[in-house]
Length: 213
Image (tube, rainbow, N blue to C red; front, side, top):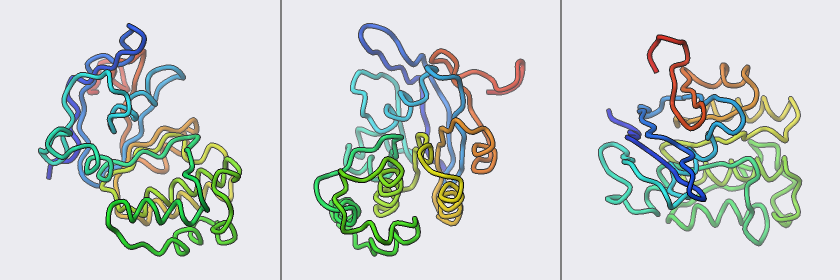
């Protein structure tokens, strides 16, 4: 079954092209690592995949349906970005998780999601006052609450200690969803992905010189 297809995706910022004609495919449920040096364009690519950078060209389709066909709301429920420094809505941590689900007409056990991420005592706290690590886990709970087809994970555990990193990884691997993962930790990329794609200077390049992309 066809999943995400990216064709000739380019992004411009301030008159400069940040991504250059990037093309790749990810099957439903597939778990892919996006690797490359700092500044290679990894975060820009993830943002472009959910149309957060408006100055882009190229084609994005999910199971044959384009971003234009599905519309931004449905597209962003299908592909959900979890950023390294996620913004929190006003209200409590639990309300952040609930609001995301209700926006899409879904019911969710937000307390169970928070417990799974070692946030059982955080639900009633003001989300905007949480630590960076707590915000990262609330953002992941919020993303899982809307039952996406694919997660776009941009350094999702960068502010967590080793115990909570493993907790998040365990939850992810038990969740029936595919993802594209950016992580500064090569070992984490190996643990959580089946294959990797590489960006260099905004270009998709072969992982091994002379090998397939």
